[in-house]
Length: 96
Image 1 (cartoon, rainbow, N blue to C red):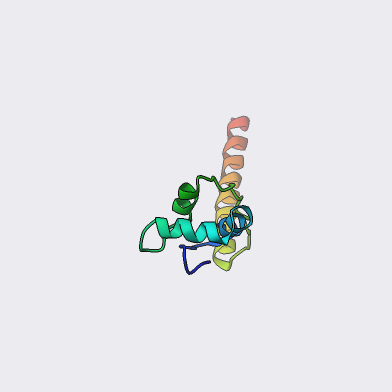
Image 2 (cartoon, rainbow, N blue to C red):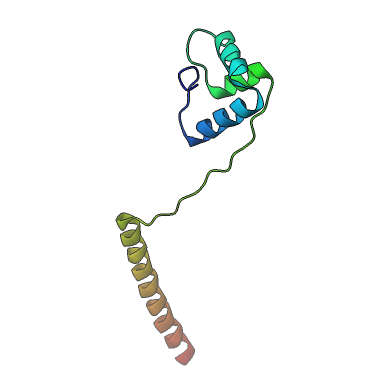
């Protein structure tokens, strides 16, 4: 079916699978043809069919990267140095 409609990401793949289950391939092909000569976006096919696809939650994959870890280490160092300076300033104020 991907040769008939624009499938650009995983959400589109899931939407197309949902459409195939709920309306069938024949209905999708007919709707794609009614949309015009170029490959339509799935949203247009859904509108043509009069259906609203469910909102699929994006699965967030948190994978640490070397750059991210280096940035976090730098931020932690900055915060630690500020905390040490803030502590010494506060200690001096309390003595004074």
